[in-house]
Length: 122
Image 1: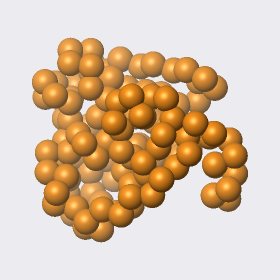
Image 2 (image 1 turned 90 degrees about the vertical axis):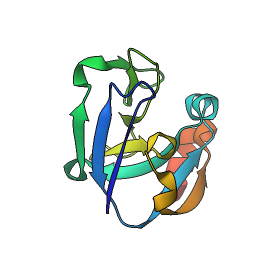
Image 3 (image 1 turned 60 degrees about the vertical axis):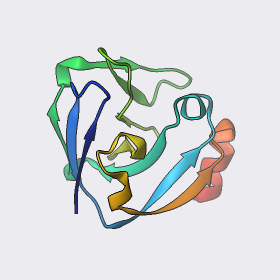
Image 4 (image 1 turned 180 degrees about the vertical axis):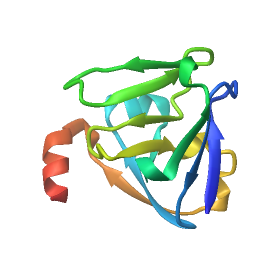
């Protein structure tokens, strides 16, 4: 199914193709916990940025592998490039126009202990 979303001021808009039933990742790392980011992993080829590429600001921390993308106008991070899924975007479930349209199964991820939590998945 097609989903749509973006930032609070609507400068950034995107669409993506996802299944009606999805798994999201609830991460407890410092940035996800502070911003309420709930990860819906979408392969690059199933995601389209419709508007706002020029409004995106990038932030990197820690290993620098993830590219956190924020709207320069309103500050919302509606999607970003995670280090855990280099061939996909992580879309914030909370940034969708209609998150209730999806059946969601949430999985906890211990991002505060990223290396050991990621190793446990492999």
